[in-house]
Amino acid sequence: MKAWMTFNPNCGTARNVRDMLRSRGIEPDIREYLKAPLTRDELAALLREMAVPAHTIVRWKEKDAVLTAGVNEASGDDALLDAIAAQPVLLNRPIVRTAKGTKLCRPSEAVEALL
Image (cartoon, rainbow, N blue to C red):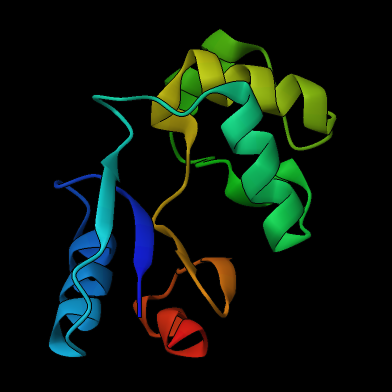
């Protein structure tokens, strides 16, 4: 099975999910999105795959970045996608894609549905 995931090496949940995949013999294709940010189009594609609104993939605890981006939980998908594309720290992680689907895997155990 192939897997792709957004990854921040400083994120414990992302490390746990990566390790869970590896323990199943799956070496994920890792996108360190802070070094190689996702484009707005890539973010929109992830939302379509997950069939969720943009506010579900925003890392709201990044209060300074949220303020700088000028968005809030009532902001529309377009504004949120623009904000995440401009400030990748706003992307909640990890997002994992396998043949079974694409999902924000918080908590880590959520990845089980994709295996």
